[in-house]
Length: 386
Image (cartoon, rainbow, N blue to C red; front, side, top):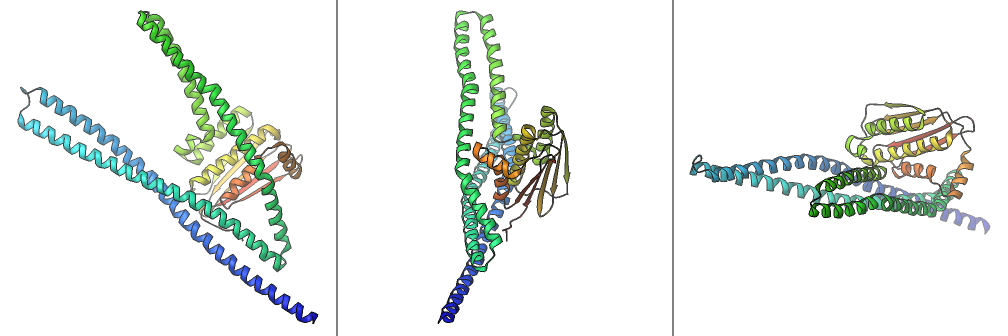
């Protein structure tokens, strides 16, 4: 009787394993299809951005030619002694032609922007869907591993899920704290400058009305300095939120500039090397790597007491790899993670999350007295961890 029950239980277990294994395959297939569509959308968005830049240049040129044609028409119509009826007709025809060219290019620009907006919305939807499918896959695989007796991977998955669950509320707190910091800086900086500028304009207006031009010019000069300072602060805020050099020139020039400035500021020597002849295919990889390096160097400056840092970025056809290594005092990783959670610091966690969000790997090695090494590896295409 016991043997029959055991046999039945084994059979049930095998059937459940089979169902879970099939579910894993189906979820993986869903994930791959969603990622393939996402990848094609990323590519199309980059193409659209390039097309829009070209069209904008064309629009500017067409507008300039349209304005010149109108000016020419005005000149022809105002001097009948110099220009005849034929000249006027030709000028009208030129204006009409340039107007049509300008309008067509503007419509093309609008159409391209509409398509890009639609793609951006679809990308957000797919990114959310991929995240949900990825989470579902991990949970189904966890159940499969439990039945298969793969306890090593079960333990690793559970620890990862536990760590993420513990860090999620902390992440919300830190983000809210960062929002308050930005709001406070904007209020104390640009907002105050703008209010002061408005006051100066009122004073300037009174001086002009009273005929005291000298004092008005003095106010204008002070207003100019206020606006310059304000513009500098606003650019700094924008750079903190989204480095424009990264948008304009790409990752490598942005890193070279950032590392050069950081090295001068910190007094720490940085050896930065780029290996490989591939190209980074996705903008989100560039942003993630830039932010990881920012955070890593910030930690070096605050905690490492290092004299030098080595950064190696390797760009291949399939993977982008990053190494950040310092010769500082090092630390106990387990102890630092615990302290970070207690203090509400998300440095290491945020770097890891950026890599994992792109299906990459993040590893950090450190020992007291032996420095710290950070290794990141992100796939150029789309992969799902086995």
